[in-house]
Length: 162
Image 1 (cartoon, rainbow, N blue to C red):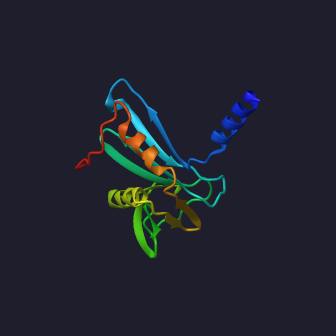
Image 2: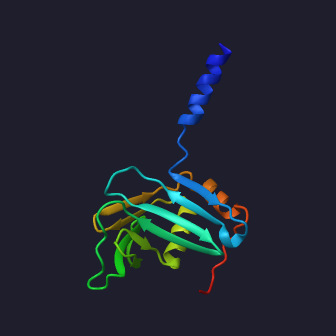
Image 3: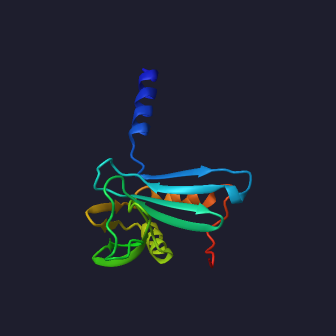
């Protein structure tokens, strides 16, 4: 009977959802060669985006990535795109940097700070860009963000003037 209870306990723990947030880290020989990553993992649906927040050398950098067709450029500027971010009833447009190929977007620092503050506050965020969408759930964010902030060899959040 005891092995059956142990097996049931393992199954319950392994099936418990901890959210879609995942933390990973690469340790180099010094902080200069180390990095930490916080990702929001979604389904393999081709119309969804992925969010990655990378911390390296005292800087946070956030990217939205897509796996299929490119996000079109903003008007004639191939280095920019437009995204929409909804928090509660408030929906705002942001101009973001678009990498060559159009499948990766760099979020501005002020938007990243707003996203982090919103998730810490327990509120869901919806992001849209030309047919793609991503809903960031605060479920499981806090413990993964804490790990992201405490990783070894990587400095705590300090905004660089560069």
